[in-house]
Image (cartoon, rainbow over all chains, first blue to last red; front, side, top):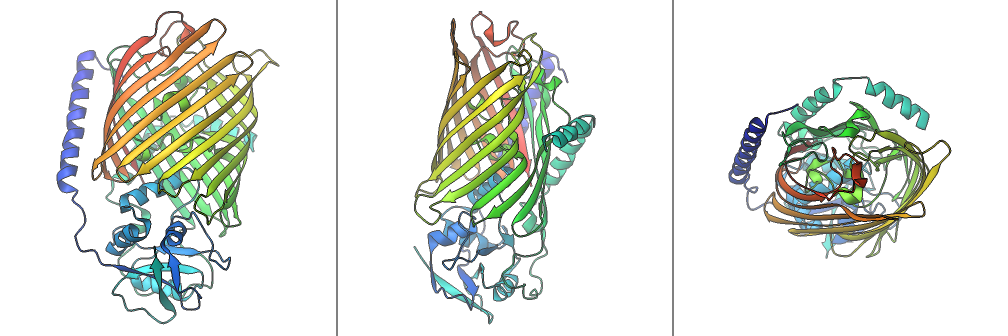
Length: 158
Length: 395
């Protein structure tokens, strides 16, 4: 595709203008999510002997940087939707990073051919149902959620 | 495996016109207001039946991902990286990745890609669509993995990600360290083992070792014909030491191989050896990266590359980026700064998977695409300023 110098300059100016316009729209329209995100509680299977976990260990499991429970079993982390408020709260609380940074981290892992993100269950009910049936699973639900039988909350220490 | 992959690539290369169609399709997919596949599921369904004991979920055995970077690029004067002074929209990378989990430990990964570099001479040998990756992966012992097939080479911060615009501060990865189009390869045909040592400690160490070969395009630029050489007996490694500071790691790597064919006489080979160090820091709003590479070619030629890249996130999604990129080539009778590139840019992430960038570069270079004698031309370096405006998307 070839352009005359004049046309090239015009296209460049219009393109830059368009991008700046998009930036402006993004800046004014892309406000942060609603304030007052709910808290979260980390849950495991009721048969899992752990009662307390280090935050850094939980973070590494959910980033798949570490993959084993203390007893040697493979950890099965379950995330929630990136659109959920509990995901945002968990990300800030456990990873100490904004959700955007974690999404970028997973893009790097996917497109370097290394690994894909944890499986996603939509909503607390799905997370609890899965964790109740899998002794290696770990998930998180809204802080105020009533836990079903078969799962328990664990304390997270810094 | 290499022969099969070569045949695949050859077959794909005749699929003329598929690249733009793939690009348009990917752009439409990625432009949809969806951050990732997980968000596509309907909200709050009824509780699922209990899962089988100690197994991963059955859904998403096949995952499909892709990315696209489309740019308009323009130089003030001259032809560099295929960018003419008349500007070009023929500047993009696009890829589609399929990942199939055969079992909890076994995966098959295939990635098709298409790349356009405007009027660059290397476009003469670039197929419209290529088999980028095609490998089998076996995961073991928690953090370990074995890969065989056509594999992305773990080399430095960006080699495996060099075309993924949504995670790059600039349209292109730093040229001197990673090269572009010629004298470089993103993949090898062979095998790789990766493992993380001290997994549960404060300073985990990621270890990658690989062996194999790859094709490599040689282009001196100017009127010199393009040649395709073969890197053989390639052996390399990459270490990454993660620090207790989130997002900060340091790397050390090396690579050795023999280069045959291409511009060499039959039976002739060059020994290429390189080592490099990396600093990759991203902490809160600041990103700071620097890499140094020393390459020894045969007994008399040395190439050294260094870059430093800084980025500041000034507000949500908006980053100001700066780059200083230097390369020096030395052999008997010649010692020159092959390519220097200073750049500043602004990138805005509407979402993590949709990023717009505007960048301005000031280059002092011997690698213009139309330099008569190629980069060995005795005349002074050319000063070429260029601008790239791009939009990157992924899903």
